[in-house]
Structure formats: C-alpha cells, structure tokens
Length: 96
Image (cartoon, rainbow, N blue to C red; front, side, top):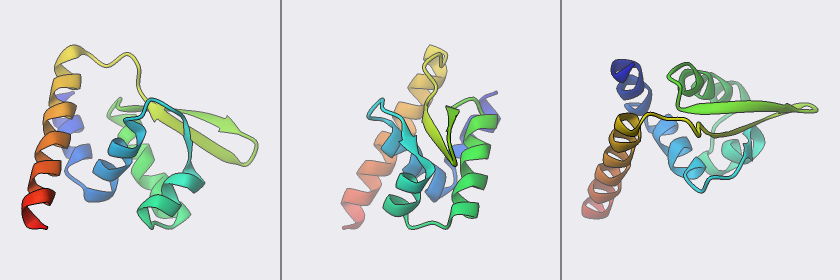
C-alpha cells in the first residue's frame, strides 16, 4: 500500500490535486483541470491513479465526476501524505 501511495504522490499533477483536495470538499474534475491546467483525459488518468492508491474517492454527478480526499485513510498514510505535502511546500518556497 505505501508504495502505491508514494508512487501516486511522486507525480506533480497528482500532488497538486491532493493539495487542492486537502480542503475536505468535493471538487469536480472540471475544477481540478482548470486550477491545475490539465486536459480532461490527463486529469482523469491522474485521478484514477490516486483512487487506485486509496487516496481519493469519487462520485458521479451527471456528466462530471467529483473527487474528495478519502476519509478513511490509515493514520500512517495520513502522516505520509502530510509529510510529502509539507516537504513539497517547503521546497517550492525555497525555490521561489
């Protein structure tokens, strides 16, 4: 499980999606596409990887799919996710 989580988080688009989903709300794929600057097919592929890793759940809403962060993550996975996001934020601040 941890390898699939780390692999999913290693890609910048997926990491940004997880950052956006960190607000605890549902986001439609169209919203994620706009904020990240990805095409629909690319965003859908990335979200599928995050779903397979157990990091997000989805819900169909007419023609759109809405995603949210999985609410039942193990504490260890929550810790890894938090550490990766914090490290990415720190690295981005230093690079700016």
